[in-house]
Image 1 (tube, rainbow, N blue to C red):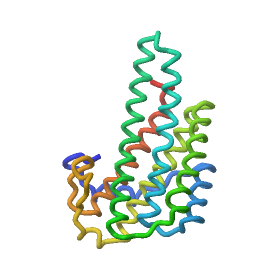
Image 2 (cartoon, rainbow, N blue to C red):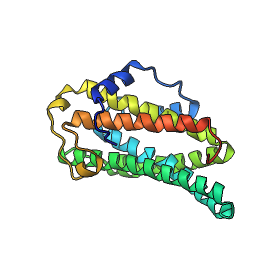
Image 3 (cartoon, rainbow, N blue to C red):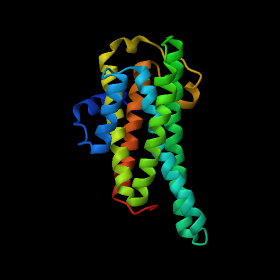
Image 4 (cartoon, one colour):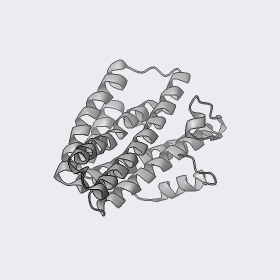
Length: 217
């Protein structure tokens, strides 16, 4: 989400200078699978797949929280904390949704062809399994699910910032979108991708903060 006064180029440099997280086994398997199916090269079409999957953990956590809400509504203090957790998860989902809408619009405008099997059906299959893994890990121990999401968001953050570095021509392309008023009035496509990368960092940081906090705190 656009925050006035943010130096997006400085934030990009900060990401590029930072080491990636030591990803866990599940995250590494997911990234390896994506590279095998979609190639190692960073592309807009591959980013749309990332964003379909990125919403999933927040949906899983929201589902668990709603179940908790139905069993604890008679404890007002706890129920309020659960409800705040639900609102936060919904905001994160919505933010990832804006990313997907903007990227899909961009892909369509540039006339990039997308295979139905690879870019429509495939991501939904991956998202289905990722949802259940995120949900199960949360039920076993929320920290496991948060750690997996932090790995995913860290990966996304670096991939977006690397893509901008690889494509300096994006500095010259103005950002025109149906969703500009909703997401932010960025001047160029380079800045839009930097902002998306920064959003992913914020999501990562939120998950890392949750690891240290009790469930629904």
